[in-house]
Image 1 (cartoon, helix red, strand yellow):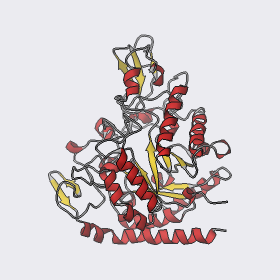
Image 2: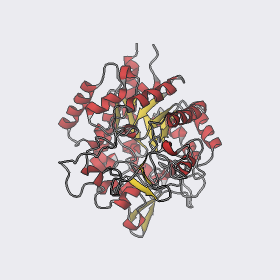
Image 3: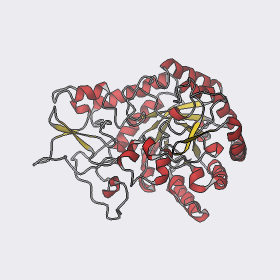
Image 4: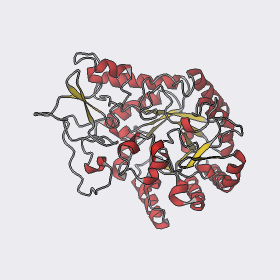
Length: 456
């Protein structure tokens, strides 16, 4: 039987707004990604996962979607996207899109209609609740960005729920109409030729039907993010979410050779449940063990053993070394150990995912307080880990992948301190990163040799 491509692939995440600018406006775009496809192919990448590029007010830099079936003009056009997919496929590269089904933008037409009236046909597409007796939010659920997760809507006299910003109201996945509409979104992109989806915060899709308070976290310590004050027993990871994921998987499986990946930050035993009954859940529930582990050989050996032992029969492992929400590997472990991390990632059994720029040793860059744009860092500047204030989602200030050697606003600029910038030329970045990228290529060669050697 033919091995599914995603079992042998190297996945490379691209955050489009800070990857490659093609038109000189200072914002990365789809044509910029397209221009780098040959480089990615030569690097040994097999699939690119592109973070959201849908129309959005950018309250959360694209994770607040106003239209799931188009491209924001910042990033190009739908035709640009189709050209990108076609050229990627011509080079043998797969294209994975970021799917953001937990919430929309408050500017999405669905939410505008939903909040227009309690009698709106789309009222139940979102999560609306009355105030507690005596007033106040319906329960103690907290936003991941700090503060109550409930926003009062004066016009209709109810609260709506938002696990993230108030500009990101959560969809009601208990409503069959919502499910049908979102599965149609998947089909739209599948028909255009995308090879799969990484599903944002997939474990959040279902909430407790009774909206009970979350219990306190007895291990909470002052200075931690407010979301850590409570154990999210009722606001996420509900058993009914697996039914939804099975339905998503059925949509995916109707198109040959596609992949479904889930973003899930949960303990190992609960993470494994997202492979689903009879492995009909996510093909790859993202494994973030390497993002959170101390960088010590014995600790890493234990987590590898524990992860492998926990896998359901027949489930395929995966490993993630970096992403847009975490400090970069070169910052976490240092530039020399980043080379060791490359070898580790590419030689562990399973599908590896790396974050763009890690292959050239890019590290986090401090952002001066007056230039911070990340919504979490703005709302909780004390509790957000310092390393994560550097470059979370890059926010258009850090541009870590080398731009083409030309002058103008499209060139690569990196903030290095208040009032100072450094133009990083392609040649200087190449000298800086040659040993790191060499490590990636050598490890990738070893990986391909090993995979070829194990084929029947």
